[in-house]
Image (cartoon, rainbow, N blue to C red; front, side, top):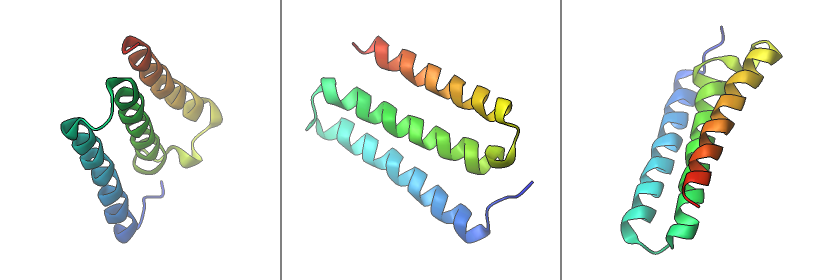
Length: 86
């Protein structure tokens, strides 16, 4: 299994942490309405999940059925959560 290089791992971690902090800051400031905040934060969560699946779980080179099932699960969960805010 190929793991990212240490610098790449650090940069990915910093990027994921930055998205988390940005989502928290947007939620705390209240500058966005609830109508826009939930989809934006769930979009961040989906993007972070995608990065974790591809980079940290090592599914970039996995069989297509496995990648599709894990990505499908992530899409299903974020979609259901998004619908729950409507």
